[in-house]
Length: 304
Image 1 (cartoon, rainbow, N blue to C red):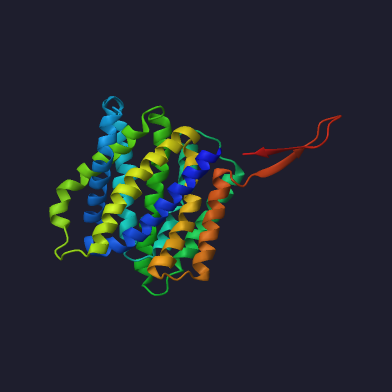
Image 2: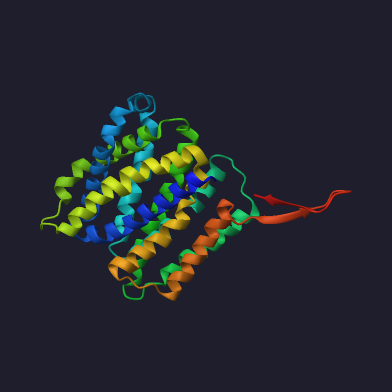
């Protein structure tokens, strides 16, 4: 991973970490369906001029179905589920759930792409799952049922992200990142358009919620997706999706700084367990094995 990629990862993590704060602000006023519809529409409109300028239409026309699948699994479904989760959970806690995406990506890559699944990855799944269970008990200020539903919604969102990353690798390798980003927002917006009249908020939204929705679409979606798909193309899906390590850090920081959210010990424990599980699953933490050859010093190698 070179310096440019590291900078892009940090920038992307900061932007996506902030998206949970903006959803936490805007979702209660817009509602999950209306907010995500607006977010997808703004994202598409923001990307469209660049799509036209750089002639993304050729890749879009050739790979429209694959881009449609990504639009549903990487935007339409997970965005809605995460927005719903923020009605109950804090921005920081929701961002921690989002970090399960690499675990799901590793599992799906094993089942679908036939990639190796070592004992270390299996341990990572168990550790990550224990972190999720811990988070179930991290919210004492709301009912257990409401917490459980919100957490399950966040996990299903992570599952969709993991699938989308693997699907992009298998079906859309070499396709213009701008075509994927713009096309996925187009299809997500198309899905939500018929529902907007029925789900549009009756009361007038505040300026804060209004601007939060704009930032979600233009920055946290349009700009972020260009960065994300570019990283997938240059690093591969399993490395690119490790941005999920950093998103909770920024999600918690923004929540504490701007929303006065409290970080409890049990929440931190659950987050640490999930991050440890993700680290094991994606290979950030690797078991070192030593092998000796006659006449040579001990050689240490990483075993993925």
